[in-house]
Image (cartoon, rainbow, N blue to C red):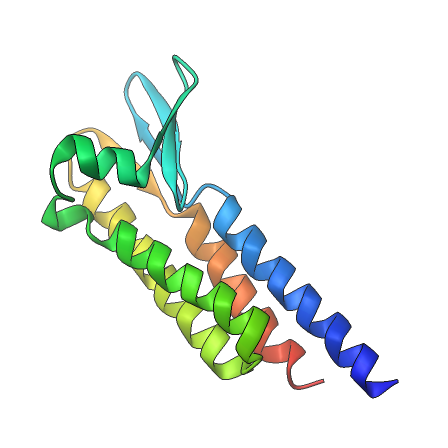
Length: 140
């Protein structure tokens, strides 16, 4: 019975971690519109085209220093997914997600430094909530 409960708890933690990576991490708003930036790319709402993070880096040549929090956050989130799925250490999973949330906040601040642009860190809330859930679920 306990083994089944632990497996169900781990599945719920993995699901929460995955959802935290699927929601928009930053909603970028400017005078003429907005677009969502996800863990793996961003969506141009005008043309409904998606640009992946690797495609963006290939096109730009490199990630500008002020936006490096984006791939760092994605890497931390992916490490959190792996930790939740295979390691099962709630502290490691929660710590990686908390660091990813910090990266998302840093990215939104970097985006907001541009004139007439505001970055709203929606994903930081989702990552922080997943971190709290991962930590608390392991204590049950």
